[in-house]
Image (cartoon, rainbow, N blue to C red; front, side):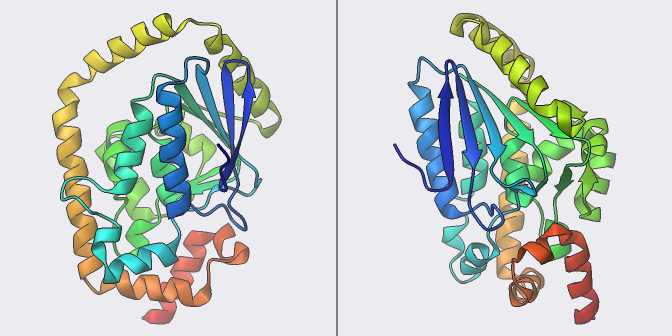
Length: 280
């Protein structure tokens, strides 16, 4: 199957997914749809044992979810959240988390918003020391509601999650590692080699051995399933409240007015702060 928002390269038992949605690798409804389709293929794929996500754009691993599509949800909230307890981004992350393969996000550049929320559901995450991680939603009048608020609080703890989510600033790869959001931050010239060596080592394990480990992890965290889904439902409620209010709508309109350009997105927190000052 051919995909328009990423390309695939099979390397033995390793599947390499290169994200490519120019001009700034925005996560879009089309990308979400295609990631669901790819996940459906992997459910029955007996060859692939490791999936590596990387980006075709050195500046943007995934920028964030396309604001124009979110703006459309203001008029029709069902586009963003058809069901009361779970929305499409939460569902996408959960579906990938449940796959039998080990998934690895290899981050160089910026990953923010919905893009960050998606990779937080991967088995492992590695980045360069200079990569940038951000949940900009609070500066836009809502919250990371694709599983981000839930997963970040679980990974970083409430104090650091509060800092990360409400500051809405860019955190470096070093900080992301310190906060538990990624496995390791590596020098840019070491990232590829480290992830490739790790993926090849895992690919040598049998599906049965990989499954044994996943079953242990599943049982360790089984008591967290119910509170996790309760937290996802709370995120979904917050999304609906944001869509129904004026703050999120005003921020969205202001951002779309300046445009989702590479210049504005390279330092998104600064762009959002500039817009906020102009609105006051």
